[in-house]
Length: 110
Length: 115
Image: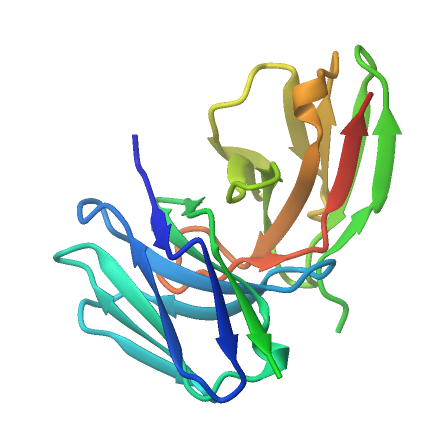
């Protein structure tokens, strides 16, 4: 059974704090690792697709790293803002399907 | 450009009934995937269709079926509804499943409540 785990389950930070989350996934049969940002009542929004060991991706204040050999990815948010409040999902791509973790729920307080 | 659209937004059914959920992919996308998200869990893969053929199926009972039409839109059908089928059903579209950077774009989902 392929399992994707995310930690922490939830996080509360103050505006301006930097934060990071972890996604652990199987290190075999790796195709890609996806990160999504999901605000309540909206569609999950694609952040990054990462395929190569050592990949680093950045979009504004959000960045991600990938280690396929040990099976983990980190998502970093620099200087969190209230609008960053959302659930952050990672998904391990195995052939054609995505296997999701349960997400990290981030709340940023002004 | 319109994103992935799903209908209806919300649906209430009773046990034993049948339901049909609909999804229209982004223009130019030929693959549609369906996911079920139960509260507190991540989305679970149900089906993937590409060029009107089933490419993958998750661990769901035969009560769940789907199809893709010539215009690449898709329907998810669930028969003999159970209380446990209450969930958010998400549809995702992508260009082509076998591409390495195959990004899946999600719709807003259909919230199904089974009473």
